[in-house]
Image (tube, rainbow, N blue to C red; front, side, top):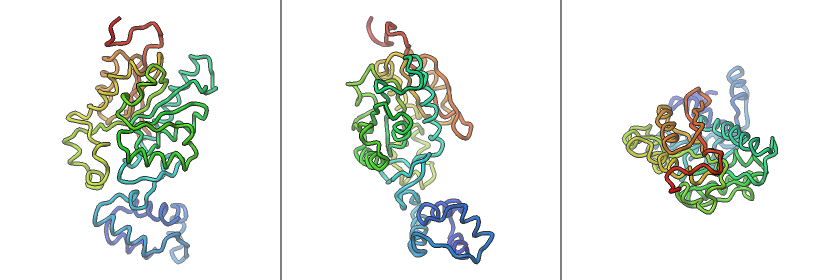
Length: 302
Protein backbone atom coordinates (compact mmCIF):
# COMPACT_ATOMS: atom_id res chain seq x y z
CA UNK A 1 0.00 0.00 0.00
CA UNK A 2 2.92 2.33 0.65
CA UNK A 3 4.13 1.73 -2.93
CA UNK A 4 0.65 2.55 -4.24
CA UNK A 5 0.63 5.78 -2.24
CA UNK A 6 4.02 6.61 -3.70
CA UNK A 7 2.65 6.23 -7.24
CA UNK A 8 -0.36 8.38 -6.37
CA UNK A 9 2.05 11.05 -5.22
CA UNK A 10 3.21 11.36 -8.82
CA UNK A 11 -0.26 12.51 -9.90
CA UNK A 12 -3.13 10.98 -11.80
CA UNK A 13 -6.50 9.63 -10.75
CA UNK A 14 -6.79 7.02 -8.03
CA UNK A 15 -9.39 5.08 -10.03
CA UNK A 16 -7.06 4.88 -13.01
CA UNK A 17 -4.24 3.50 -10.89
CA UNK A 18 -6.56 0.93 -9.34
CA UNK A 19 -7.67 -0.06 -12.87
CA UNK A 20 -4.03 -0.56 -13.83
CA UNK A 21 -3.40 -2.74 -10.79
CA UNK A 22 -6.50 -4.80 -11.56
CA UNK A 23 -6.17 -5.33 -15.32
CA UNK A 24 -2.39 -5.26 -15.74
CA UNK A 25 -1.27 -6.80 -12.47
CA UNK A 26 -4.08 -9.12 -11.40
CA UNK A 27 -5.00 -7.23 -8.24
CA UNK A 28 -8.83 -7.04 -8.22
CA UNK A 29 -10.53 -4.22 -6.40
CA UNK A 30 -11.89 -6.59 -3.76
CA UNK A 31 -8.35 -7.67 -2.86
CA UNK A 32 -7.21 -4.06 -2.92
CA UNK A 33 -9.93 -3.16 -0.44
CA UNK A 34 -8.77 -5.98 1.81
CA UNK A 35 -5.23 -4.63 1.66
CA UNK A 36 -6.46 -1.26 2.86
CA UNK A 37 -7.75 -2.96 5.99
CA UNK A 38 -4.54 -4.97 6.38
CA UNK A 39 -1.80 -2.75 4.91
CA UNK A 40 1.03 -5.03 6.08
CA UNK A 41 -0.28 -7.97 4.05
CA UNK A 42 1.60 -9.08 0.95
CA UNK A 43 0.18 -9.82 -2.48
CA UNK A 44 1.56 -11.43 -5.63
CA UNK A 45 1.27 -9.34 -8.78
CA UNK A 46 1.41 -10.65 -12.35
CA UNK A 47 3.74 -7.78 -13.32
CA UNK A 48 6.65 -6.33 -11.43
CA UNK A 49 6.32 -3.06 -9.59
CA UNK A 50 8.95 -1.62 -11.93
CA UNK A 51 6.88 -2.49 -15.02
CA UNK A 52 3.75 -1.01 -13.49
CA UNK A 53 5.57 2.14 -12.49
CA UNK A 54 6.87 2.54 -16.06
CA UNK A 55 3.34 2.23 -17.45
CA UNK A 56 2.00 4.71 -14.92
CA UNK A 57 4.72 7.25 -15.67
CA UNK A 58 4.06 7.01 -19.42
CA UNK A 59 0.35 7.49 -18.80
CA UNK A 60 1.06 10.61 -16.73
CA UNK A 61 3.76 12.14 -18.92
CA UNK A 62 2.20 11.50 -22.34
CA UNK A 63 -1.50 11.19 -21.45
CA UNK A 64 -1.63 7.81 -23.20
CA UNK A 65 -4.78 5.87 -22.22
CA UNK A 66 -3.93 3.03 -19.87
CA UNK A 67 -6.07 0.73 -22.03
CA UNK A 68 -3.68 1.29 -24.94
CA UNK A 69 -0.59 0.83 -22.76
CA UNK A 70 -1.92 -2.42 -21.33
CA UNK A 71 -3.48 -3.44 -24.65
CA UNK A 72 -6.85 -4.51 -23.31
CA UNK A 73 -9.97 -3.50 -21.43
CA UNK A 74 -13.16 -5.03 -20.06
CA UNK A 75 -16.58 -4.39 -21.61
CA UNK A 76 -19.73 -6.22 -20.53
CA UNK A 77 -18.44 -9.75 -19.89
CA UNK A 78 -15.64 -9.56 -22.46
CA UNK A 79 -11.94 -8.89 -22.22
CA UNK A 80 -11.09 -6.97 -25.38
CA UNK A 81 -7.76 -6.20 -26.95
CA UNK A 82 -7.56 -2.54 -27.92
CA UNK A 83 -5.06 -0.25 -29.60
CA UNK A 84 -4.83 3.23 -31.14
CA UNK A 85 -6.74 2.11 -34.27
CA UNK A 86 -10.01 1.88 -32.31
CA UNK A 87 -11.97 3.78 -29.73
CA UNK A 88 -11.83 2.40 -26.23
CA UNK A 89 -15.30 0.88 -25.61
CA UNK A 90 -17.27 2.96 -23.12
CA UNK A 91 -19.51 1.59 -20.35
CA UNK A 92 -22.46 3.66 -21.60
CA UNK A 93 -22.46 1.71 -24.87
CA UNK A 94 -23.02 -1.59 -23.04
CA UNK A 95 -26.76 -0.96 -22.79
CA UNK A 96 -26.98 -0.85 -26.59
CA UNK A 97 -26.80 -4.65 -26.69
CA UNK A 98 -29.81 -5.01 -24.41
CA UNK A 99 -31.83 -2.51 -26.45
CA UNK A 100 -30.85 -4.27 -29.66
CA UNK A 101 -31.90 -7.65 -28.31
CA UNK A 102 -35.31 -6.27 -27.31
CA UNK A 103 -35.78 -4.97 -30.86
CA UNK A 104 -34.65 -8.26 -32.38
CA UNK A 105 -37.10 -10.11 -30.15
CA UNK A 106 -39.88 -8.00 -31.62
CA UNK A 107 -38.78 -9.00 -35.12
CA UNK A 108 -38.71 -12.67 -34.15
CA UNK A 109 -42.17 -12.50 -32.59
CA UNK A 110 -43.63 -10.78 -35.65
CA UNK A 111 -42.22 -13.58 -37.76
CA UNK A 112 -43.80 -16.14 -35.40
CA UNK A 113 -40.35 -17.32 -34.32
CA UNK A 114 -41.05 -16.57 -30.64
CA UNK A 115 -37.76 -16.89 -28.74
CA UNK A 116 -36.06 -19.07 -31.36
CA UNK A 117 -33.44 -16.94 -33.09
CA UNK A 118 -33.57 -18.11 -36.67
CA UNK A 119 -30.63 -18.32 -39.03
CA UNK A 120 -32.78 -16.26 -41.39
CA UNK A 121 -32.42 -13.19 -39.17
CA UNK A 122 -29.50 -10.99 -40.20
CA UNK A 123 -27.94 -8.23 -38.12
CA UNK A 124 -25.17 -5.73 -38.80
CA UNK A 125 -22.82 -3.58 -36.76
CA UNK A 126 -21.71 -0.49 -38.70
CA UNK A 127 -18.47 1.13 -37.58
CA UNK A 128 -17.53 -1.90 -35.53
CA UNK A 129 -14.19 -0.59 -34.20
CA UNK A 130 -12.95 -3.06 -31.60
CA UNK A 131 -15.84 -5.37 -32.46
CA UNK A 132 -17.44 -5.05 -29.03
CA UNK A 133 -21.02 -4.63 -30.28
CA UNK A 134 -20.60 -7.44 -32.79
CA UNK A 135 -19.33 -9.70 -30.00
CA UNK A 136 -22.27 -8.84 -27.78
CA UNK A 137 -24.78 -9.65 -30.51
CA UNK A 138 -22.97 -12.81 -31.60
CA UNK A 139 -23.01 -14.08 -28.03
CA UNK A 140 -26.70 -13.33 -27.51
CA UNK A 141 -27.88 -14.44 -30.96
CA UNK A 142 -25.93 -17.64 -31.62
CA UNK A 143 -28.12 -18.79 -34.52
CA UNK A 144 -28.16 -15.48 -36.36
CA UNK A 145 -25.64 -14.33 -38.91
CA UNK A 146 -23.86 -11.03 -38.38
CA UNK A 147 -22.03 -8.49 -40.52
CA UNK A 148 -19.49 -6.06 -39.06
CA UNK A 149 -18.38 -3.08 -41.13
CA UNK A 150 -15.62 -0.53 -40.71
CA UNK A 151 -13.89 1.86 -43.09
CA UNK A 152 -10.61 1.43 -41.21
CA UNK A 153 -8.47 -1.59 -42.04
CA UNK A 154 -6.74 -1.22 -38.68
CA UNK A 155 -10.05 -1.34 -36.84
CA UNK A 156 -11.13 -4.43 -38.77
CA UNK A 157 -7.87 -6.16 -37.83
CA UNK A 158 -8.56 -5.38 -34.17
CA UNK A 159 -12.16 -6.59 -34.44
CA UNK A 160 -11.04 -9.78 -36.17
CA UNK A 161 -8.63 -10.53 -33.33
CA UNK A 162 -11.30 -10.00 -30.68
CA UNK A 163 -13.92 -12.06 -32.51
CA UNK A 164 -11.44 -14.90 -32.96
CA UNK A 165 -10.43 -14.87 -29.29
CA UNK A 166 -14.09 -14.99 -28.27
CA UNK A 167 -14.90 -17.82 -30.69
CA UNK A 168 -17.30 -15.79 -32.84
CA UNK A 169 -15.25 -15.42 -36.02
CA UNK A 170 -17.27 -18.03 -37.90
CA UNK A 171 -20.56 -16.24 -37.19
CA UNK A 172 -19.61 -12.67 -38.09
CA UNK A 173 -18.39 -11.53 -41.52
CA UNK A 174 -16.02 -8.55 -41.43
CA UNK A 175 -16.39 -6.11 -44.30
CA UNK A 176 -14.28 -3.07 -45.11
CA UNK A 177 -16.33 -0.13 -46.30
CA UNK A 178 -18.39 2.91 -45.43
CA UNK A 179 -21.65 2.43 -43.51
CA UNK A 180 -24.57 0.94 -45.45
CA UNK A 181 -22.70 1.29 -48.73
CA UNK A 182 -20.57 -1.71 -47.78
CA UNK A 183 -23.68 -3.87 -47.36
CA UNK A 184 -25.50 -3.31 -50.65
CA UNK A 185 -25.64 -7.07 -51.46
CA UNK A 186 -27.77 -7.48 -48.30
CA UNK A 187 -30.02 -4.44 -48.69
CA UNK A 188 -33.61 -5.32 -47.96
CA UNK A 189 -32.73 -8.22 -45.65
CA UNK A 190 -31.19 -6.54 -42.58
CA UNK A 191 -33.40 -7.12 -39.54
CA UNK A 192 -31.30 -5.17 -37.04
CA UNK A 193 -28.55 -2.63 -37.65
CA UNK A 194 -26.57 -1.08 -34.81
CA UNK A 195 -24.18 1.83 -35.19
CA UNK A 196 -22.14 3.88 -32.77
CA UNK A 197 -20.98 6.51 -35.26
CA UNK A 198 -18.85 9.62 -34.65
CA UNK A 199 -21.22 12.16 -33.11
CA UNK A 200 -19.09 14.83 -31.43
CA UNK A 201 -19.21 18.21 -33.22
CA UNK A 202 -15.87 19.04 -34.85
CA UNK A 203 -15.20 22.12 -32.74
CA UNK A 204 -15.81 20.12 -29.56
CA UNK A 205 -13.33 17.38 -30.51
CA UNK A 206 -10.48 19.87 -30.17
CA UNK A 207 -11.56 20.59 -26.60
CA UNK A 208 -11.84 17.00 -25.42
CA UNK A 209 -9.57 15.75 -22.68
CA UNK A 210 -6.06 15.39 -24.09
CA UNK A 211 -6.10 11.67 -23.31
CA UNK A 212 -8.94 11.26 -25.82
CA UNK A 213 -8.17 14.06 -28.28
CA UNK A 214 -4.52 13.17 -28.87
CA UNK A 215 -4.68 9.38 -28.79
CA UNK A 216 -8.05 7.96 -29.79
CA UNK A 217 -8.81 7.98 -33.55
CA UNK A 218 -10.40 11.26 -34.62
CA UNK A 219 -12.11 9.38 -37.45
CA UNK A 220 -14.24 7.66 -34.80
CA UNK A 221 -14.96 10.85 -32.84
CA UNK A 222 -15.59 13.70 -35.28
CA UNK A 223 -19.24 13.90 -36.37
CA UNK A 224 -18.93 17.05 -38.49
CA UNK A 225 -20.10 20.59 -37.81
CA UNK A 226 -23.12 19.62 -35.72
CA UNK A 227 -22.10 16.07 -34.85
CA UNK A 228 -24.79 14.53 -37.05
CA UNK A 229 -23.02 14.08 -40.40
CA UNK A 230 -22.55 10.31 -40.10
CA UNK A 231 -25.96 9.83 -38.52
CA UNK A 232 -27.56 11.61 -41.49
CA UNK A 233 -25.79 9.26 -43.88
CA UNK A 234 -26.96 6.22 -41.96
CA UNK A 235 -30.56 7.39 -41.71
CA UNK A 236 -30.71 8.32 -45.38
CA UNK A 237 -29.85 4.77 -46.54
CA UNK A 238 -31.72 2.90 -43.82
CA UNK A 239 -35.17 2.74 -45.51
CA UNK A 240 -33.69 0.89 -48.49
CA UNK A 241 -31.18 -1.21 -46.58
CA UNK A 242 -33.43 -2.50 -43.80
CA UNK A 243 -35.80 -5.41 -44.26
CA UNK A 244 -39.50 -4.55 -43.90
CA UNK A 245 -39.93 -4.19 -40.14
CA UNK A 246 -36.15 -4.09 -39.63
CA UNK A 247 -34.72 -1.80 -36.95
CA UNK A 248 -31.98 0.82 -36.95
CA UNK A 249 -30.45 1.54 -33.53
CA UNK A 250 -28.06 4.48 -33.17
CA UNK A 251 -25.91 5.78 -30.35
CA UNK A 252 -25.72 9.57 -30.23
CA UNK A 253 -24.55 12.44 -28.04
CA UNK A 254 -26.48 12.92 -24.80
CA UNK A 255 -28.10 16.11 -26.17
CA UNK A 256 -28.98 14.89 -29.69
CA UNK A 257 -32.01 12.70 -28.94
CA UNK A 258 -34.69 14.98 -30.39
CA UNK A 259 -32.65 15.78 -33.49
CA UNK A 260 -31.95 12.13 -34.25
CA UNK A 261 -35.57 11.09 -33.75
CA UNK A 262 -36.63 13.88 -36.11
CA UNK A 263 -34.15 12.66 -38.73
CA UNK A 264 -35.46 9.10 -38.45
CA UNK A 265 -39.05 10.24 -38.91
CA UNK A 266 -38.16 12.61 -41.76
CA UNK A 267 -36.73 9.68 -43.74
CA UNK A 268 -39.86 7.58 -43.35
CA UNK A 269 -38.79 5.31 -40.50
CA UNK A 270 -41.55 4.55 -38.01
CA UNK A 271 -41.99 3.69 -34.32
CA UNK A 272 -39.11 5.97 -33.31
CA UNK A 273 -38.13 5.91 -29.67
CA UNK A 274 -35.29 6.96 -27.41
CA UNK A 275 -33.48 4.70 -24.95
CA UNK A 276 -31.46 5.38 -21.81
CA UNK A 277 -27.88 4.39 -21.11
CA UNK A 278 -26.72 2.96 -17.77
CA UNK A 279 -26.52 6.46 -16.27
CA UNK A 280 -30.02 7.45 -17.34
CA UNK A 281 -29.05 9.64 -20.29
CA UNK A 282 -30.94 9.50 -23.59
CA UNK A 283 -28.08 7.87 -25.47
CA UNK A 284 -29.77 5.75 -28.15
CA UNK A 285 -32.50 6.18 -30.74
CA UNK A 286 -34.28 3.49 -32.72
CA UNK A 287 -36.81 3.35 -35.54
CA UNK A 288 -37.71 0.84 -38.21
CA UNK A 289 -38.78 0.45 -41.77
CA UNK A 290 -42.53 0.02 -42.10
CA UNK A 291 -43.36 -3.69 -41.62
CA UNK A 292 -45.74 -3.60 -44.60
CA UNK A 293 -43.92 -5.22 -47.54
CA UNK A 294 -46.06 -3.22 -49.94
CA UNK A 295 -45.32 0.15 -48.37
CA UNK A 296 -43.29 2.45 -50.67
CA UNK A 297 -39.69 3.17 -49.72
CA UNK A 298 -39.23 6.90 -49.06
CA UNK A 299 -37.29 8.61 -51.82
CA UNK A 300 -37.93 5.94 -54.44
CA UNK A 301 -40.22 6.33 -57.44
CA UNK A 302 -43.42 4.25 -57.20
